[in-house]
Amino acid sequence: MNKNRFVIFFVFVIAFACPLALSAQQITRFGVVDTARVYQSYFRNSAPVRNYEAKKAQYQEEINKRTQELQELQQKKIEYEKKENESAAVRVEAEIAKKTDFLTEYTNAKNIELETIKNSLIRSDAFYQKLYATLNHVAESEGYSMILSLQQANAILWYSPSVDITDRVIKELGM
Image (cartoon, rainbow, N blue to C red; front, top):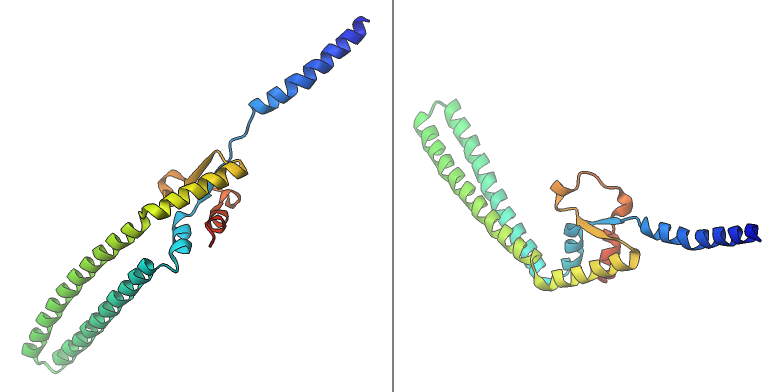
């Protein structure tokens, strides 16, 4: 009889203690999301992003045009120097310096403008509300304890592609 009690007690301990021990050892799952890629997918067809891309192309076209002008002036200066026409070479050099300064200022101003537009698009409340709701849904439905952004690269030193849930988030956002 004692032997049966021991067996029953042992079965009881195993039946109830093992599940408790296993549940206490819950493994934390991490996921990473490339928020820049999600952003690009989400806004690919939006008017504000198309406007941003159009401005970016327009500014780049202007920069290319002015760079070409500078290269032509540089070539002209070299020709004047070969012909030993120092006054013309100095005049062209002054024009090159003036146009280079303008191009530098133009490029800096337009880069600041584009960065401001990009940041306002990225910080769109509607986008982030939908993104966070989607991240919450994906994390809870797939058992993730934490989702990290790849854009905060200083916090992520390495990650396995198996934890990248970017494609799942893009799919959930309906893109």
